[in-house]
Image (cartoon, rainbow, N blue to C red):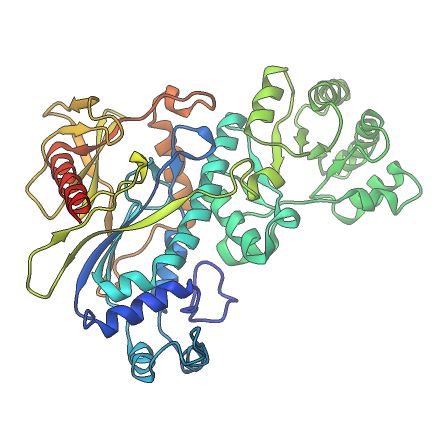
Length: 492
């Protein structure tokens, strides 16, 4: 079952797929290709949010899903009811019996969660029986795409906050239960300090935060009475929402109750601004709090925040200490999908050599790359310099990388540079190997990875392009395969 992600789901979820994955699997089975081996890679073609990097996430969910991959009797029975356009059964009973007996046996290599990644390079490599590689495509894209998108958005928001805590408040605006839980998890990997989502807190171990809403204040005769009642009920959790009626009066009422808390050995933890001119109101709130001696009381802000608005508020001198970000984080505003793809790169029959494959397109970015790909990241000190995509089934790579979209851009890296290969073993023969880093380690990795990027790559507008390219030998092979494929097409 989905142990570390969303364990309330019924498991297994093998029908979480597009129908064409099953029709292709049936075609492979009918064609006698059950034993054929393949290599697929999952990557995205364009940096999300117009930024310079993305943060890989969703691997834990993918491994959980793959670990329980099997077609139950109920699954098979349902598939037996599907019909083609002639009204007859879509799948033969013998294929469904094979499907019910199938056990997942692929090898998976992937970049760890929290890794900074870039367009065109594989986040995940699948190697194994072609029919199995095909069956898992849809679920892998679903699980990796969304979490990577949200973790990236969170990393950008946290960068804008410049080290101040960001709280994820998006549960009520998320796309359903799964969207909410997945977003809470990915936002934490991306750097958020806590979530309002209590179920995510229980399932994932993410810290939870929250105090009261406007309805609490409106339930009492006046705001001061409401604050006093809350302080009596929860003196150790007092962040007062101060904008129900008049924001600055609300801050003054919070100060009044803060004095009562202090007299009883507690403290006024904070005030929250949820509307209006957040820059002006935060400055005035800080003045009121400081004049009253509440220098350690934080100012929390919410209200459709994102990385750009946070950056703007900071430029305006806002005195906000904690940022509550909801809708625009969990819905990945203003890019609703990552656009990740999953492409075949090589096939071989049992005992035979790899036969490399390439997909053509009139759009250069959509032409695929062959090989059993690996990503080698070169570093200098604590700074990432460039990523080289190379064929791990071939010889040791050269240090010359070629831009896939502009082959005139080539770069040869110094021989003494340190490097690491990013795709690491995750599953072998369908079984998870080793231990995936826990959520807190993934979050720490994100912070370290983002800090290792040049400042030009981290900026929000017109970021510098991080160097990613094909190793020269692989680039030459890809070019040859493209030319040969186009020649075959022209002769037909």
